[in-house]
Length: 93
Image (cartoon, rainbow, N blue to C red; front, side, top):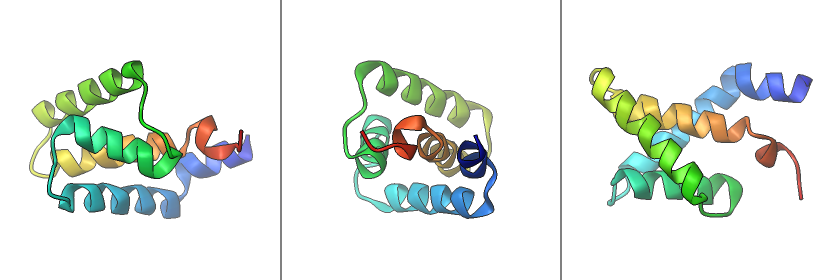
């Protein structure tokens, strides 16, 4: 449990999630589906499932509609942080 809590609360992990979001947004294609797909590919070395893609895109679009100037970066940063905190990220299969 301490490893999961570290990934959720660590300033270092939060900073890395933000850096990954900035890196993704700096690329040429910033369509929501492509951003989500690249986030999964970089962090888990696989593409998201249809269900994961749908949920992540919905989360990103809702965040864009409700937040201010940095909405895209904040939303993508939270998505990256959630991926980093996932069990799949923590354990080698």
